[in-house]
Image 1 (tube, one colour):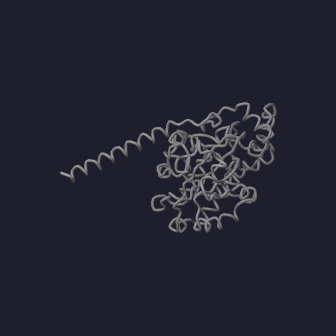
Image 2: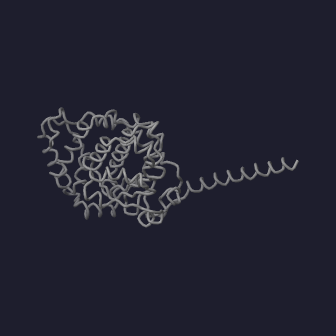
Image 3: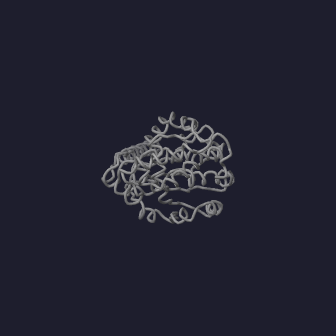
Length: 321
């Protein structure tokens, strides 16, 4: 009888504990950060964001049509290139290069050359071909933006299982997430912050990484996408990660390297990004559940990613540009 009573008490205690976990999780999911943190889905250029565009990107609303016309004229003269001429598409590149039409033109050429230079990375470059990566919940944008309007990409490289997800697919999906994010004009203007959580990153991960895949990933993300990389924050890093970083560092520009921060603890991270918009695993107040809304939005843009493949260079002649 005593054993049964003890068992009943233990079961009851476990049930209460599980109930508390559910209540806490539901409460965290319902927490709303203060109003200074806007939703990731915000796509309206408010007065504050317009000021950022004017001060940091030299954007002038009345000058946009002229810049677009200049860029279109340059693209029409580019041999063997079938470019997308959509205004919203071209505006991404103008913003990424502070409305310098020549620099924007050069970036567009690199954007369309990337699939030719790295065909394996861009083969089947659509969300539905990356369902394995989506279901792994390793890369996604957090539900809220930083106080400065930056979108925040969380990459859980340490949780990657190389036996179920090849390295090239992991990196390909990271690029896809970034490309999806910059379709939003607010992200084009304010930029992207990346948090790389390296917790549990081990030799088993490192040994599955091909330097050719890393070179492709870095080159595409750093040099070919119209994206403002504001800062990268490395958390839970180890000596094993240092080996990987030693391979990656020579591929980075000085500008990018100067914007990488290594955090030895969560308090250091919180000095740069408020816990109000971070998940619980990073000492934040929000749920650790992935941002399913972002994944849904990504999947709903399948046709746009398919259409992307209709544009580009006809041959490899331009690879030396």
